[in-house]
Each structure stands twice: as structure tokens, then as C-alpha cells.
Length: 502
Image 1 (cartoon, one colour):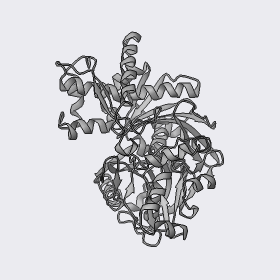
Image 2 (image 1 turned 180 degrees about the vertical axis):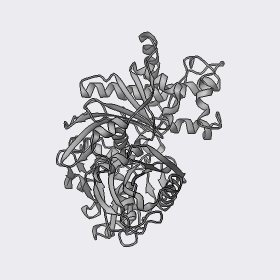
Image 3 (image 1 turned 45 degrees about the vertical axis):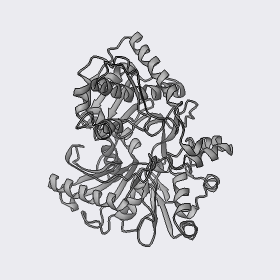
Image 4 (image 1 turned 30 degrees about the vertical axis):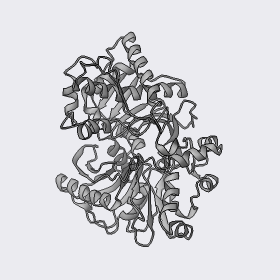
């Protein structure tokens, strides 16, 4: 019987399922969106039961479209929105509260207090991360403190914490398995990178009971088998897990030291493979696990821009300047330049390398002649310039420039954005044959674990480049863009902070 690999990509706005054959060809794809919840400014939540329904629907649709039966699945790979935090009842599998999404900023004050206690260096040294609401640790603490009885139940071992990968495996296995992988663990502020395990001292500072934490496993091994999943028979191996950005790094076949990729989704994420070397950042990046296969760990430097594609959604839904996200390229091409208009998409604060949760989005340089086309183009330029900031920091930390960047994610289909990125970075951009590299990475990891793919070289050979973008901007023009951008970044910090911070 012919076998296939199933990949589940559980993202911020929807769940995607892919079916792959042995040649790493995508036979079918299905995506099911789910609702976003914004209880108050700066808060973002997901209903995990809606996520579960979206996953089951996407898997069923993908299998139907591929004309593949569940019995033909050799294994399942999972990739997921990373820092999003779920706490659930071990006996029922039901979440005690909506999931707190990675974009959520409700623990800003708590993070500020931890820094004021002098703990920033300790956390960064142990975890590779900066203390920020982005990461899971303070989200867990908030849930245990704000849901009635949760802390007592957690200490008694009745509750479980997980990022979405962990929660999905728990549900897929019928409640039999509570695990996570090293990449997701490394995004919690609780994982000691050097030791490769949970850090009890850090958990103590964040008041997270060890009893809620999952077992940490590698990225390519059989963790459990399906049990009671509507779209699949029991007994299908769950065999690969990686957080979305690490999965994309693997899916882009960035297997060598110095290989770099950028994913343009809701946010934008630049990662460079640093091999078996833990490279501490002095430039506002984070050090993270790239993957662990067998007993070999691979590390990466990462920079995260919190808003990328979400800025285009804001132009569409918030301002009504475009009716579909795809229209932004056509609109931006109506003008040859933004004519000095600068947009800093700090709609959820600034991520790396600035790490300013109080920063606010900024649109400046407007004149009487400014049109929606100029604003559209400035939005694309702002998305690209965020990546330039990250790349500069990465070169400082890694000690060597990269001459090529591999790209993926929905916004990577925007040809103007990709050309602007090549121009403003001054490096070549490679766009792969399939931009579904996040799901592909999960599929590759699962396929390696069940001997569906023989080795990484076979995966590398299956990876193709659809288009290359070469830089065409002269150095002086690039410098002008950078100067305007840096001035605008400085002004985002002049915004009046929220009332509780005054």
C-alpha cells in the first residue's frame, strides 16, 4: 500500500494540512480559519476548541482532496504557533481559559517587574531569550493567578501546560501523551538551552509549578499514536514536531551553518543556522533551538518582527484602503516610490532588536500629495526595513554577513515586497517552489523518523527555487531609506504610554 506523510500546520489565524508523497510533492492542501478574540487592547486569545475543529476539518479535507485514506498515512508532523499558551484539565482535556496568543501583551508590567528585580541577565544567559510578554512563561503565571483555583490545582498535578503542539499531541493521542519538543520548549523562558531541560530556578521566579510542564523530546521521533481522532484511524504515528519558525528553517533546507530564512506571515521571523554552537546575542536577538535529531542539537539566532502581514490586514480591515490583502501590491505599484512616507508597523509594540512593548505604530512624512498608493508602498517598505534591522543585528552577533536569504510565508508571494527586500538588504532573495515550508519542515521531520525520507540530502534534492530577486538599488538610495527609517523608529518611542504606566 502506498504511503504518505500528513503535516499539520497550526497557525495564528488558521490550521493547514498537507499530504506529501515520497518525492516530497504536495498532493493536497486544506486550510480552515478560526476566530480571533480581543477582550481588550493588547490582549489576544484563541478558543482551543475552535482550533481543534479547524485541525480536524483541515485534515479531513486534505485527505479527501488527495484521495488518500487515513490508513495510508505513514506518520504525522506537527508545526505550530509557538509561544501561544494553553493550560488544560488533565482528566477532561478541556482548557481552563482561552489560549493566550504569542501577540498578547497583558504581562508587560510583570515583565517590567522581573527586569527591575535584576533577572534579565539570568534569563537571557539560561534561555537565550529576553524577558518579554511574547514568551510563554509569564502567560502561564497569569493564567494560574487569574483563573479561580488554578494555581492550587496546578500544584496538585491536575492541570497541564503546553504550547499548541503539546495540546494537539495530547488530543490526538486521546489524552495519553503530554510532551513538547525542544524548539517549543525553548520559547517559554523556562528551558535551559545548555542543559537541554527545564530550569527549576527560572520556573520558581515565574511561579510555574514543575507539575504542569510537559516532557521535552526531540524533533524527529515517534511520540505517540493517534487515538480517537475523527479524521484518522487509531495507531498512526505522531513523529515530528517543531515550532513554526524552526520548521520553516528545516523546510527551507537550511541545514548548513550560515543558512538563513525569513518567513512573512502575521509577523516576520528571520533565523540563521548557527550549527552546534550556542551564539549569545548582544544585539537584541534571541538564541534558540533550531532542532534536535537523535542526540545532536542544532541552534539558531532569531529575530522577530511582531507585525508583517498583519499590517496589510490592518490596511484592509481597519482603514479600508484595500479590499483584499493581495491588492496591496497593485496599489503600491501605482507610484514609483513612497515619496518620503514612512510607516513603522509597531501595531503590537516593537520586537527584535528593539524590544519596546510601549512603542506605537507610526505613519509620517505625509504631504498634501500623499495618496493611498504611497501609504501602501510605505507599508511594504516598513515590512522590509524591519528585516533589515534584524539582519544587521544578526551579522553583528554571528560575525559574518549572509549573501542570500530564503523566503516563505504568504507575503513572500508579493513580488514587489520581495524586490524591495532584496534592494534594502542588498542580498539575493530565493523564493522556493512551494511557500508552504513551515508545513514541509514538519513533514520532513516526521518522514525522517518513520524512514519515509532516507536522509536530509534526499530532502535537499527535492527542494526547488521558483524565483530569485537580485538587489537593484544603489547604496546611496539605500542609505536614505535607512536614515528615514531610523528617525521614524526613534519617534515610535515618543508615543504616550498606556495610562497605567504614567
